Image 1 (tube, helix red, strand yellow):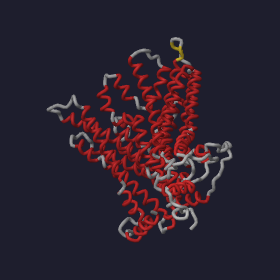
Image 2: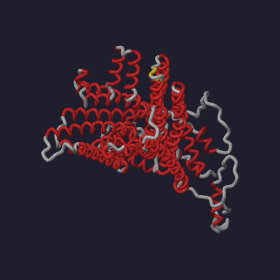
Image 3: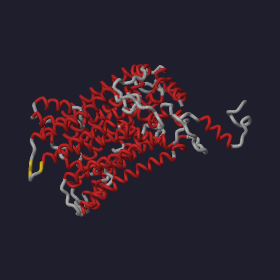
Image 4: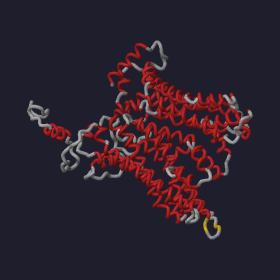
Length: 629
């Protein structure tokens, strides 16, 4: 494979330099050809177009009572305008979700596969490597976005879509696509692994696009909105496509006194500066980072707690202590993670103190304490959801990452059983999330300290969280066994976990809610797999005064029990399926004899092969390759 890759690079460098863009280099043509043949890109575009068609049909069905034989032009134009608004948000969110996954592994994946040195050994320049890969990833993301244009064309036949607004929306989308891809490329240059680049990019995007809204609202409430808060908010929002699209698609422009072209102009200027900076830093550091990481040795942190002895469970010790459980996300991703933790902990502590200073007593009960417990429950649910997505992606690289680092053969050559390896991978992934569990436990402890009845929900919250976390880790390990690369495993596991855990409500809400409207039992059945619903139910029963014995309460309890047990059973089934198919997927020779007693899990690959050769009836001198020549 490496030899063929070098031949392709040589052919591209000698034969296509005159035909393709000189500045991008031959790697652009090679990457463009190879990526165009990948089936997953075609499937993603098809799924995106099918989703937009489904949204178009759902929007059309929602206008069912107004459609008639003589539907006027105003009705059709209003329908097209509403669909265009949904289309704009879907397209922007899809670009924000897909662009990091497509681009963040461009350099980091080459580093994991140890093929980046071959690129550096050729006469390719740094800007040809970075910009060639960047241009191909941008084109792949652009093809993904273009797949939705035929669906938009269907709606445009009904009128109601302003050409100026259409141009503004696509300018926001294209600029955001270039900026997010450049940011992902910079993260990929500095990351050691592809999963670290992808997770770091999503963390930076979340802190840059979502976190400013609650931070500005919270700080403005505390400080009374001084002028510098508004100036800082304007500076932060200039590069926020969600803010720009929200202004354009609503009547807020007249309220703030700005024209749509000024909003988009500032967005293009700010995002263009960020794009140029990220690409410049990537070109400057691609070779320097590789030299630094290749020459750097393994350093033991002085603040790390002493490791216990391996003992009997050597594989579990490896996953928990030998491997670095917390990813090296880099400077910006580390700052983003620290900002998230500080914001969550800061809001919880501040509101705790504020509720103690100004309690609100109504009817003999402290209303402020109940509100604080509800706020803590909401914060913990959001924290758990974000953390589970991150560690689902981490679990999806536990097996495929071993293969890409060329240490998988050494692992399966040991005397370790499939059950020991798979279980250690899942449990080690849960242990790696200990920082997340500590933050969630801190939030729950504050809720119990302020409102003691909240403690009644603790056992159920812990059980539901463990069941969902076990399912997420088992799902990631299962995909990591089946997929050839970590990128495929991460994409499949995160997409499926997001859809099953509640994402289906966003794309399928017209079908669910139209059929369940007015039917409480049907509504609760729809929410049974949704993880936010399952985490909120124990708090609702502990904080709200729900009537006991009512049909709604009984159905809510039944939905909670079935949902929690469903995730626990699904996690156990995935764990069992991973163990059952481990030897076959790993290409491992199964032993017919009982494993011998071992201390420290010794390597016995030669003995296993020799036993099976002797069982076949061949003599050591005739057919045994380990016998004398």
